[in-house]
Image 1 (spheres, rainbow, N blue to C red):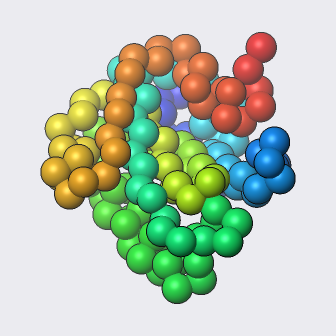
Image 2 (image 1 turned 180 degrees about the vertical axis):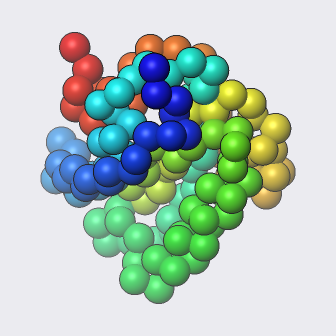
Length: 135
C-alpha cells in the first residue's frame, strides 16, 4: 500500500452551483483520491475561514494572495503530520481539508480564531464525497 505522503499530487478543479445559483469551487487531489484508503492518516481535519464580503461567495481578488499565504502556512504546519487533499470555497467560506495522524499542528489556527474540526474517517469517505467518487 502506498503511503499518503508518497502519492504524487494531481490537483483538479471541480465546479458546481448551490441551489441558489452561487458558485462552488472544489480543488481536490485526484492522486490521493485514486488510492484511498491509507493507514495511519485517518483523521479528516477541516480548517475554515470566512471570506468577508463577496458578491458570489468566492474570494475577492484582493484576498487571493492572503489565502495562498494562509494555505501555505497550513501545509507547512502539517508537514509530516498531515496532507492537504482538498480545498473548497462556497458561500463566503474557504475550507481546507487535510488527512492527518495528529491534530496538534492545527492548534495555532484554532487559537487564531479559524474554525478547526476533525473526525476519524479511516475509509476517506469525506474526501470521496468531495471528489464525487463515493459509492
